[in-house]
Length: 277
Image 1 (cartoon, rainbow, N blue to C red):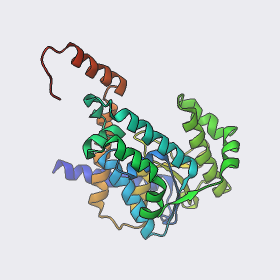
Image 2 (cartoon, rainbow, N blue to C red):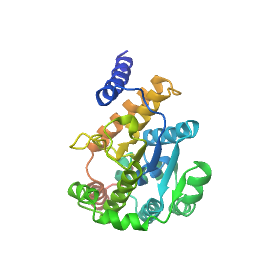
Image 3 (tube, rainbow, N blue to C red):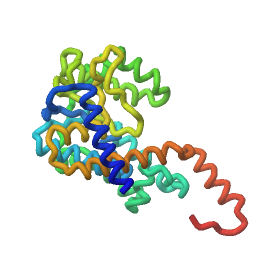
Image 4 (tube, one colour):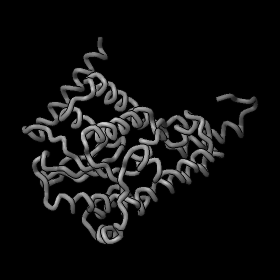
């Protein structure tokens, strides 16, 4: 009974949040650019909740004839990430699988070997274009150079202090969306183009000047898609949203993977008897 109440509250929050931002009808015409973490979730290499959310977005987009794209730089970044995780998989420590959003956790859950993960990376373009009907955007080097000196780059750099390649990637994606929009957007229904990220962190929908951001979270987008074309039962939307909130909240309380690795190493080093995970 309590869970049913929570689902009703969640659906009410989705509707009231949309009404807060825009009082018009909900647009069903989107042009989506996918982030690396969205691709990882779509491949079922993150949490089950993230996979379900991203898969449904792509499925609904196909039904609604929305365009779904990915930058060739995103493909490069995703491949590098998968190959790096494949190299780490042989030295994978059991405690590191506590974070359900980690690729290594998904490999453990799905019994994927490092060879399997390398094969997924090799076939990435084929999987995205053939299985998910996603268009790969190439020849965006000029935009990438432009992004390096943009306000997007400086803004992302201010809160992401590591992985400079990732900062440039996201700035390029934002520049792509900004160029397609051609002007600042103050009405949600005019925001046809979006850079979609599947992150556990909150993404502000509005900029400081009250214009709409170029980036939207997968959760926010799925909720809006449901409002514009409720092909999914509202119970499914509520279940997805609540499960993801619980998962993200649990993961946020976990120690870092480095600390977990050190703990696992010390247990193996100092344990007198054999310890089974």
